Length: 141
Image (cartoon, rainbow, N blue to C red; front, side, top):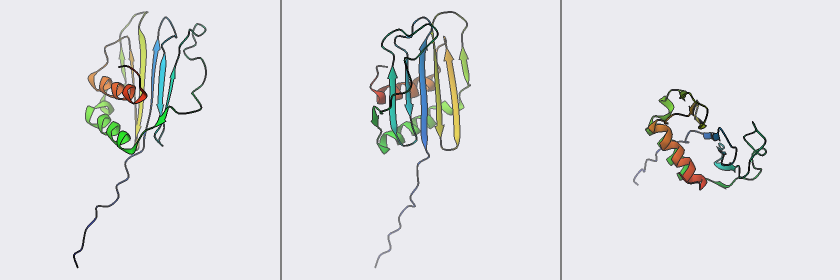
């Protein structure tokens, strides 16, 4: 009888993230995306102006847009690791009055890293992760 060796089950590290895009002059078009550690993806897009200084028209949606598959979560985790996102500086800032502010906070296993970009060209790793998150959420980008 032949013995077959099986690789040990390797649990993938827990992945969660929050992304926000807030414009300076109008709340219309602001959007935020949250992926929880169970793979549920929540998306909130502001479609009308909120009172001045208020970026969101309410709390997070109660119902997720969808649940990512294990393969989608693994792919996103791989992109986060391979892109160098976890090694980026925490802040990318350019002075000014108009523009936008984006924040992307990622927790992957025991590590959490948050990057804020305000009125500046985002670094390539940030763009790659943001684009993947937008695609999973069904948003242009």
